Length: 173
Image 1 (tube, one colour):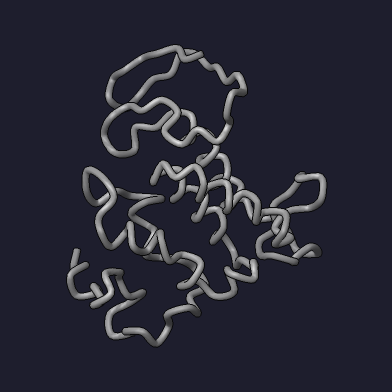
Image 2 (tube, one colour):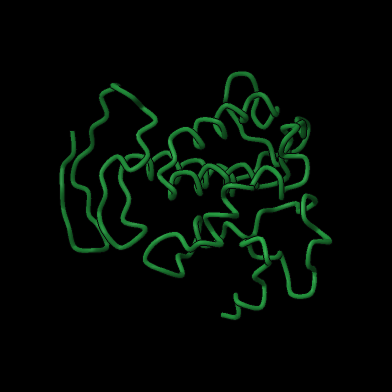
């Protein structure tokens, strides 16, 4: 992939070839986090991915308000899980309700903040779910890690018969 063509002088990747800084702060979705959330391109986070994660609220349109379009907040949560950033994940999670991304009973996740009369967004439900269990167990970077982003504190979490793509089977308490 031609990521080097997208690399800015500030250490993050532009959203698309030729865009430069023109869409910085106005992106609907944080595509620079894709390697953290969906498909790793290295054995761990790359420097541009780390930088994109650090500036995710500045590079994404209205995120500082907080207001999120489509699956953006779900990707923020999953990226925080992959970065093993408990404080960052908690910040993102606290924005779920404050941005009106879910109803007050947490029954459904809206497609976009304040989109209460539209259908819920199944993709974002999946990202939330993946983030929640990636906080407990993950082999995303090629090794099995237990509680890589432990946002649950002293709460008891247990599960069994975990099968990893790496061929590991384990019960965790």
